[in-house]
Image (tube, rainbow, N blue to C red):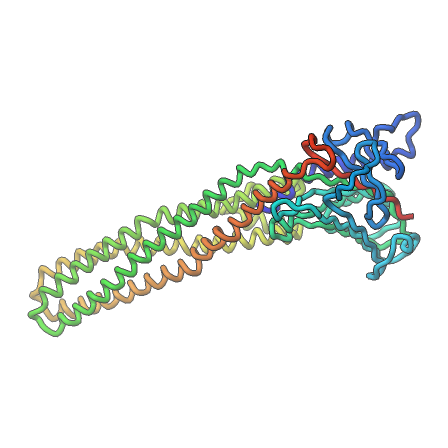
Length: 482
């Protein structure tokens, strides 16, 4: 779920940045064409950007930075920004050559292994939450000067001697959600000869996060409530098994006493019959909850499968691979292991492996649960027969010695089984259900509340200098390093 929320809107930004970089690459080759309204026709003295051509008619702030990301000049529309209001996020660009830090000036023309890191930081808060942003950065390079090019959070598109690098970050989002799944920086790595880097452009906006529909999280609230109901029901079952175990111990004690005197046979037999009937009733009650318990656990399993399906559906690359390699999809409880294993083998994805491991762990728990409920149902059937036998025993006291000996042996075994059942239920609750409840009411519930608070924080910031604006975008232009 975390990844699907975080990555669902990246595609539109990647398309935008790709288009902007294409325009930038071809401006110098254009003839008899008016590019005065092009999105990237930005100079250090004037933005020359048509706000109508940006993402919307809402507020757009243009930031002209140096090669380290520090802002030298800013514009609101085509007007120089004179506001003293600090920007809600900062950019820091750093460079290393063969593992050692180096300035942008000194790295020009150098050769070796280079790393370029773009690090965005959200600096504005709303109700203890950082204002979250999605940033997308576009850079073009001459690929003849770079080998082994890679990026940790982004995509590289090669075309002839030119490579387009698209990096994305989510400054503020990891802080708000208490997770490290949303990076605030990206790093480009390569082996270079005669280092040079073209102008880069970064687009930052929070409207995508602000527009998230948090009403869809209500279904998670229902799951949390269902898990709590499951825990309460299991506690009642355990209480019943405890009473059953106590009753069996009392019954066994009575039978042992009965063995010492034939005169007390009728009383002991009646106690046995009553205890056996109580046992049958208790196990039947326990068995009647088996279907509900299995259904609830299966619903949770299917919910986990659905979350992984949603994540994959939001990833066009994975959908392409699924179609190309005829991998069974959507995932089900029957095919998830094979399908995810196939995808992991192709993509080497740590995230898919983590999802597969989580589903496998839950599948182990679910298999154990069904085995447990089957055992309860079998025990309930057996207890019914036991109750009938105990009543027959109470009626037939003539076979005193043989009957009492058999009864004592059977009751002792039944007592041991009852104790084992009670112990097993306690273990299942403490090691299974209690952990699930703790996760639902703490980790999962906290994450959902954090998402809602994060979306509120994003909604709270919709303008920089224009109170009537409904959304705001920041466009960073960083000069070339050459």
